[in-house]
Image 1 (cartoon, rainbow over the protein chains, first blue to last red):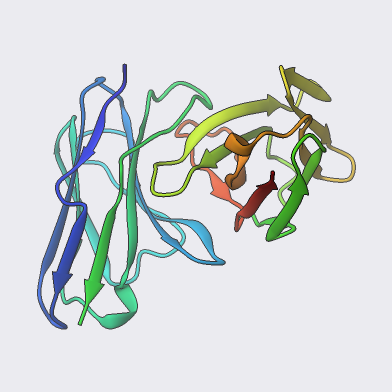
Image 2 (cartoon, rainbow over the protein chains, first blue to last red; image 1 turned 180 degrees about the vertical axis):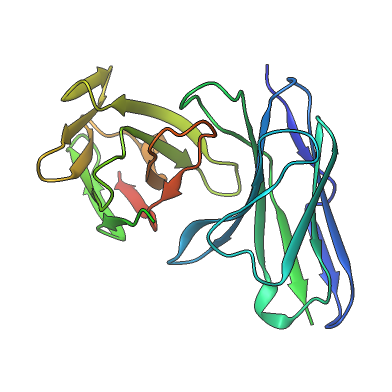
Length: 113
Length: 113
């Protein structure tokens, strides 16, 4: 059974703080993704990675960076958190084969004050 | 890039009736169309998908139809039950080696007992 875990379910940070969100998957998946989910806007892709140390910008990368030093771990970094980054952040992983299922983590609800 | 529009944003149906959610996409190269279900407080999970070489796919009470000419696809749920209440997301992708999905904005389906 695929397991995708995220380091925190809830997080409260101050404007200007550096924030790290971590995601770990245990199925040796090639691909990993970070999305943010906002009401009325659906799931929007921030960054994705299809291999260790590889990253690609998604649709809304501004204000974010990522790190993938190990295959199982994909980190999302907010260099200087702002209030408009208050959101639900979802990590997902996929096998890397063509158009297979993405498996989501439980999400991190981030509040930036 | 790809743009996916989803309608309606909210839908209420009587238990036992059918529900239909519609999506349109913009990129004619898209050839994979999954649907994800997100129950309240839980992570999105794949419920059904369709590839462009078929026009319809069924799985018990759930079916998806695809019209490539018109660039639209739909989710049909028959004999709805209370456990069908959730947010449903459609998505589209064009395979180029790394499974990037573009999601719709979601439909909140409520089943009225």
